[in-house]
Amino acid sequence: MKNYVKNNSCPLNIGLIKKIMEQKSISKKMLCQECNISTSTLNRILRGITKPRISTLYNLSKFLNVSCEKLIDKSYRKMVWQKFMTRSQAKSKLLD
Image 1 (tube, rainbow, N blue to C red):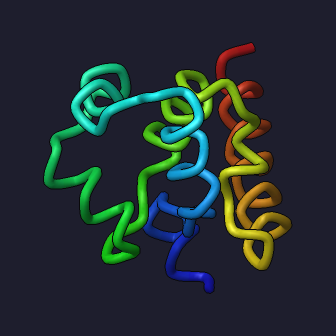
Image 2: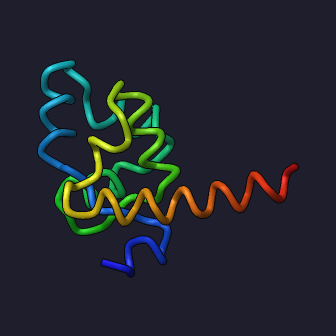
Image 3: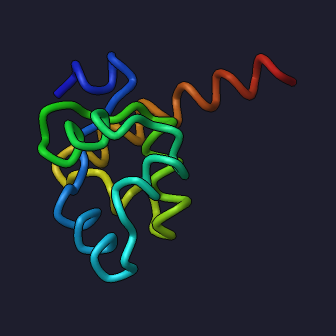
């Protein structure tokens, strides 16, 4: 589990993403364009071969209109958000 956070990536709830895409008639091409990722990257994410970066997770959540938390696989949510918040807090202190 630690490798996901260390590599700035996280496992997704792939079923939810596919369900939202189907409900909203969002094509893979459209999702790629809006999230600024390649088609091959999206395909690898949707097959569970690769995990998206945090920035990609944010873009996915924004375009699909669902919280980042819901897109992250349940078993990893707490760990990912703890690490993310620690980094965000450190970054905000540097910017102050």
